[in-house]
Length: 144
Image (cartoon, rainbow, N blue to C red; front, side):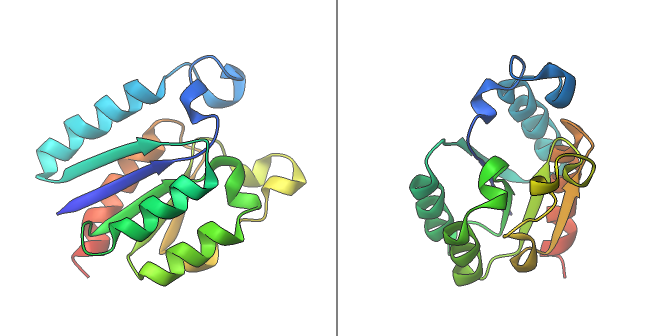
């Protein structure tokens, strides 16, 4: 089984950007934790980050036939990108939306996810552990 983890804009700044909201864990730390847990679950992980919406769309499109599940933290694109929504819908792979913070407890504009309707589910508010929860959900989604 292969899971593609996609990370959107500004997630490369984790650990230094608004630590009171996002914590002090870096994206590299999160990736390391995901890889450790993935090894225990016998899951192959591809972990990527881009600040470019177009690159994220291309990676989603390339996942068809190459991955079993997509886990995406689209960051700010969650609330603005019809292109990401359409790409997720087009590839037809089970996709899990994740967020470090609870987007529903934050600013009003963060409450609406344009990608949620085409995702299997959403995990938010558990900090870096949201990634581990999504990895474990990926295994159960693939088994169904």
